[in-house]
Image (cartoon, rainbow, N blue to C red; front, side, top):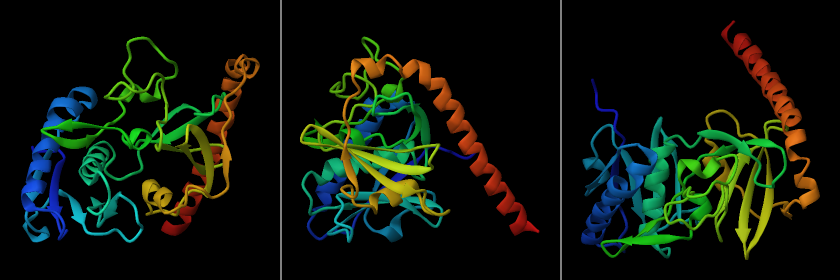
Length: 280
């Protein structure tokens, strides 16, 4: 049986980063995967240093350190030729933690489309489908391994329906309840009724919502599409629900769940119909 363990290739094409620093970072991230990530997420993975892209073995997923990313992001990941790939900008602050960020997210969601259903971050009865990006909501929090900064990450309990005592929602224990977004972090989801993508950003202790509109066309990953959209477009402040509003959440939850299921079924029927036509 072939080895299905995710294998990450760390490659530097940056003129500003020393080879010794990349090798040390690779060792630190492997320690993070084995010591911190694996016990929580139960997904084994390896990361290896390669001097050039030509040296990368077939079957490895490349994470490439570059001098600059055209989109001005700290790091991006997506897919090319049906293979996960990530880029990290070495000119940005905390670039080592960004490499850690991209590696961990690549392991959990290689193709940037994994979704999980849970209650809406706005505190309403709505059930939405969140994109599983385990470092985005806590992307500005780090810790050290062998003197090297690595990224914090949320745990599988992050999407729990309710807060429970003694449950850890992120590795560093900074989150006190599910679906928390820490300062400078963000969270993305699909509204199953409208079919729209949304993004919430924590900025200066306020949570801001952006409606990113319709889902991207087939072949474009949700993560790549969200990263291509400015977070400030049509942004509105999310207010916490009042205690009176909260009392009605349970009563409307079933109603919203039924509406969401019907909306998804309608879109699936449309997709099946167009697929049949294309095959005829």
